[in-house]
Amino acid sequence: MGSGRHDDVAAPDLSLGDDLRAFVDASPSPSHAAAEITRRLREGGFRELSETAVWDLSPGDQVFTVRGASVVAVRVGSDPVAEAGLRIIGAHTDSPTFRVRPRHDVRQAGYRLVGVEPYGGGLWHTWLDRELTVAGRLALRGGTTTLVKLPGAPLRLPSLAIHLDRSVREGLTLDPQRHLQPVWGSELSTEPGLLEALAAEAGVSAADVVGHDLVLADTQPAARAGVDGTWIAAPRLDDLACCHSGLLALLRVSAETLAGVSAETRHTQVLVCNDHEEVGSGSASGARGSFLEDVISRLAGSEPQAFARTIAASKLVSADMAHAVHPTRSERHEPSHQPVLGGGPVLKLNANQAYATDAVSGGWFTERCQEAGVPVQHFVSRADLPCGSTIGPLTATRLGLSTVDVGAPQLAMHAARELASAVDVPLMVDAFRGCLAV
Ligand SMILES: [Zn+2]
Image 1 (cartoon, protein in one colour):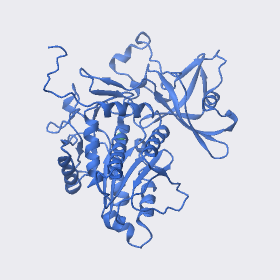
Image 2 (cartoon, protein in one colour; image 1 turned 180 degrees about the vertical axis):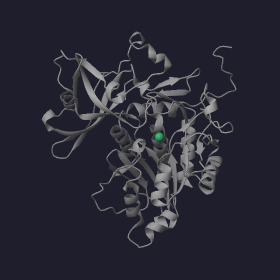
Image 3 (cartoon, rainbow, N blue to C red; image 1 turned 90 degrees about the vertical axis):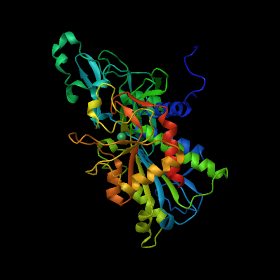
């Protein structure tokens, strides 16, 4: 019996799942996620273009540009985009967390606290009693920025002991203004303040820090989980897992083309990872902002009808995590639509257009999965439950792109630690590779 594994059953390949864990650990804030994406793009032969520069692109060029904590990467195909269109994978770099306030030095009850504001719709109780830190970017005098993350686990949101509030048995109520302000020391401590600590960590002078985008982050590394170790327990899987799969698909297509394994595609391939999805995408770098549209106009060129023709010939795969059926709350799923961990990409549909998938875009994605030998699962909300949404309908509404909403199955979405399956990572990459290549 030995390990209990039958010899004729191949062990699942967990290497891409392990790579996803490394990607999540390298991305404690949206700014870090954007930096990790661009680091890997550079390694894969992509070069950065500034939004302030004039772009002059040729077939085969591999470029990316950054706005805030959003990234757009482009592989230019052999034909003009107005004729061949774009194949776009879209995901988001942000996750529910807490943002550090401008005047964050709070002192009360003999403690030093860090004033924060909730960001997005988190399951905030899951942040209690965890080892937390602060990560993000500092704006420096002169207009530059630098990434920073405090080492160790300096911050904490301690629960209130049950002896001091028996009513918690009826359900925990947390007031974010009063109860969700992390503590990081005693008022007697003579340690410097948060900005001084961050400046020292970043190797800059605190006097040169003129602004910040800082969030709280769980410090426990992402881990293998489950009886066979094929699950991934990690923070921010929504939506770093889709950023990661989209990025790996683009880099794989690039490597295959450069090695001559596959021919250059006619169409141009695009990966867009937007910030601010969790707060409605309404920002300069969010999906309701102009970032993707501005890049597409540059790719389309100045001919009057080029932009409209490009949009009409293009396809967007909006990639955002999906809800796997819950082990003890399966009644919250529509009985005929219960995606499972490890079952492959989830196609999301909603009659009221909370998802942008229609017959043509969903069918196109399904065909790409069939060609790649990847199974497809389906998600719809129960008719008596409201449906979440994502960047797909927003981008489809703004640009008129044919869009399909998909995601990898996961549990505990918006908890401090979420759960997904490493088995789905290569399936998502294969599906996205097919979408970029065809
Ligand atoms: Zn998401």
